[in-house]
Length: 305
Image (cartoon, rainbow, N blue to C red; front, side, top):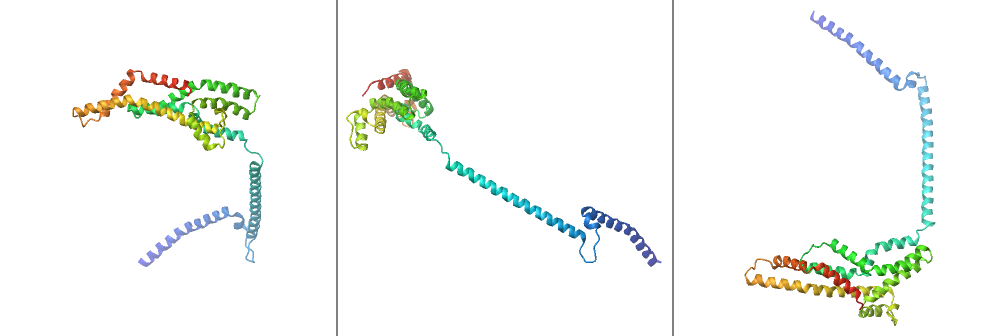
């Protein structure tokens, strides 16, 4: 009886599993029909190949042809774009060039600080201001920006007559269109050259004239600008160092007095700079040093050598 019981249970389980298998088969057929409806419903002929296969092959062939056509059209578009870019590049490279006036103008803008330092009183002013800061013992006060601004304003004040002459003789006629750019440049350089010749030393002019010219002209005014500019810079450096040495003497005296006092009382561990620096600043403020220095610098430019 136990054997028949186990056999009955097995048959019952098989009967329960058959509907699930049948449902799975139907669902797989439905999915296949949805994914590939043509190949699913077309029946296979006896030859072994299906009509759906032929249709899909023909479609794939047409798709390949279309893809090839798209690829060839894309290649043609890329080639035409490359030719267009080449034509644009050749047009930009061969046809039109940048005007020389723009190139020269941009170059002069980059060289403007150097020209300002070399052809104006700024050389002497900056040298004197840095010597003064070194003599006072203040390494960062006043700062470089403040000294540069003060020197720039004093340069603008001292160069006003020269700038006015340049504006009247060169800038205004060029703006009115009565002279060309080259003529304006020559007329504008002439007042600046006369200013530099006024303060350039004869010895410095002779050094550069003998080195750069085979025959030296009889008059200073006939010297070229490339000789006048370096001679003027050397002359201004010499004048600035002379004024700086004179400025150093009273502050050096204060340093010597403070050092001798601290040594005599046995304060060997105390640096003399700690005491001398406040004393030098106090002395400079009491005599109104900035106004006195600015006045003497302006007067030094009014005396022609």
